[in-house]
Length: 360
Length: 94
Image (cartoon, rainbow over all chains, first blue to last red):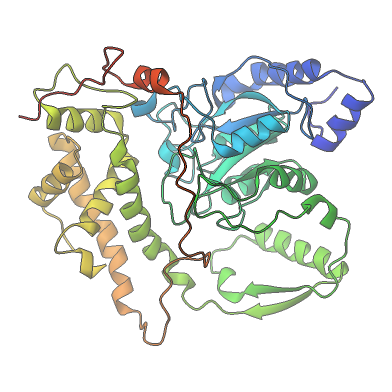
């Protein structure tokens, strides 16, 4: 049996007892055995545990290694968290557990989700399953590669500045960045709290809708989550798009866009049109400044969020060589963080420091 | 904007990151390049552009001040790199 089923198809087969949850899990384990020495999508693998009865009962999924999983090592692809075992589950992980999924393991990503190629992981890059000479994109490259290669039926990623959408594009899978506030980030290792989101990576839009339905919603532990009820996204998929107007920012069709990319976007537009949607060109005139603005805001927030990795409460520590507390901090962080992480922390520290804050 | 090696060392100290001599050199170049790139923002006319401070529109989100049990003491202590099982060990400040 090929491992490329959608969640819906797998659920049908489980219901009709064509295969058991354990067999479905084993099928994916075998696929990981076959592919992952080359792909490096998984950092940690976990044994089969039967899930509870629920909409994802028996569905094997993978979780990006920036989301906390109780009792399962969570590293953010960084040496500084190489041995960290979280004492609690992220809200999204707890929700998947309640829905009955089975965890296959934790997926590789750029260190602390800082990157767009998966090359900044302290545990080696991930390869694109379609062509291993190519990168899978990032930072959720392990999650998208695992789903594309049939190593997992779905995965969770996080998106701060494209980290679900871009690798999903590179790997040819569905990646969905939810609206900020739709999905709880409690238990997500924070990068840039003003932008961080958690979302599904799947092989079909229907599967993405299903996972989003499960992980979305207000959470007491994340004050930015919206108090709005969660619609049944899967039911909306059967409707047409009459009366829906979709804006296309003209600035997004920038110079340097590949012909193939342009053609696929136009195809998608035609599909929406055939379902009744109308399109309207809009202008977002500050688009060209988005990246320089991001280069200020993200490092500032990252430098604050990553201040907690001090070698005292969790993760790696360099106590032995240090003479005092300051040296513990400096050695631990100097040796624990990779080049990209240090660069961004220092940039943020600089922009927030006295004398420069007003300039930015 | 050019960042000198002394400035990089000062920033690294503020960020509590020990750098090697080589890293100081590397970051002096790299951070200067990023700051030059960011400088283009000074050319943008933002007159009449309203300030965005957040996107959700939520205000004053509070929760009830209720005590809830957290049974994580042992696990949290175990996660600390240096602990005697009762307390987290920290080096002397001076």
